[in-house]
Length: 585
Image 1: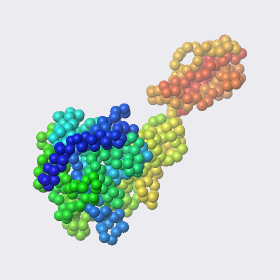
Image 2 (image 1 turned 120 degrees about the vertical axis):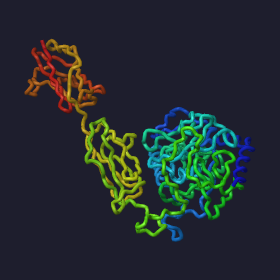
Image 3 (image 1 turned 90 degrees about the vertical axis):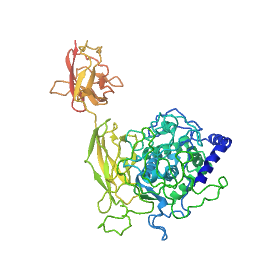
Image 4 (image 1 turned 45 degrees about the vertical axis):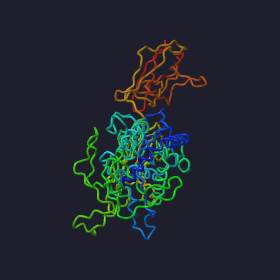
């Protein structure tokens, strides 16, 4: 292993001119320079990443390849277990993050045609799927995953851009997290993939969504081979890297399965921020012939620093002690089992020793939360629709992709401004949709939940209702007396302001009409009047509405020929009423 490691460093150090030429060529081939415009919340509205800087800063990566025998999809081969080979297993939380990122980008940039298997291939090459799924329930790595110091010694030379915020290094940058973003690239492309209000490159949901938008930059269509290759090369500008990612991409597209967090296959060789792992006892796979990489080694370890020895280290994971701000893993974090070795069940568990419990399979969705939800037009509903995915015995099932859709004649939208989105169930089997923003259209609509790709599992419907905006107070904005001579027009316009619980009540429906008395709603024939479009007298107005400040200004009023005091009654939705006196003299 030291020979391979040294050879890799020498090759990088002695071909500077070739590397520079390659980077120039790749930059000319439209490597990512666009900015994400999706719902992930990028703040870089007008910035453009340098075409010379890839996502990872061209840090080294794991070059091991999948087995030569590709995984069969479960149930299609009598020669393989139903779950497929261990190399096809992806940790549950990591897999959920890839699928959620695919769903988000598909809704926001459908022309990109991003498959989640591409994210999985990159995640495998960059960090071994977050070191075999060493993440917490929210998707954040239990210990930092840091690439080598990018100080120009064998690697790129990138001075510190984040003041050590993400990588703990205030002199140089390092690639960070399960998708290995350098801090300067994360500053432009970072996303909030799990909706917790922060953008953390150490969180697989955030990092996977950021990678998805980066790969889709420049209106790429990843179903087109040229765009796919450009996207991968924009992540790390190396033909060897491109071939490695494509190999895993094809492998995962042939079939994968979910494994528990922390039980994924670990990369061979020392990885950044994690212990060495013992190589498998079976011979490693050989590399398919490639004109551009005829001497590619089977395994090229990813070092922390140049010259790191490759002797396997069996100690538990430890973050680098010298790095300021590096969080410690939780006390008592169990050491992941050796890949391929199932954890035996507890005595009396009823299972054959050495056989893992079968993964639960979703059989139904169950409605949770309250019944009919109601919100006033223009406001937000107080809670999101939620469901629980259960198996046939009623136990919760985690990692299930649930699709929520707004159905019916409504302009209500989920807070991201969408009528449909996908949420993955948590450990309790529950998935909760974002809250809904009510539009101006009143009435009842449905929030429907279904299991993605499982049409036989019945849908669950939540009923929601939007009621009209209301006002409980109404007052004139001026106290000027309203007077006019017979046959003339009133000089002052009638203007009122509607309020609800003391605040301005915008867009509230209202009406105005001349009445005979407080108890008689009929309009006197000789009262003042408004005019319609043809100039004819009009003594009642409907379909009025307050403005954004709750103010309603009535049209010009004309006096009749009869002198006297007359009453104009203004009424709003919600029951607020104001009677105004007008004098003709």
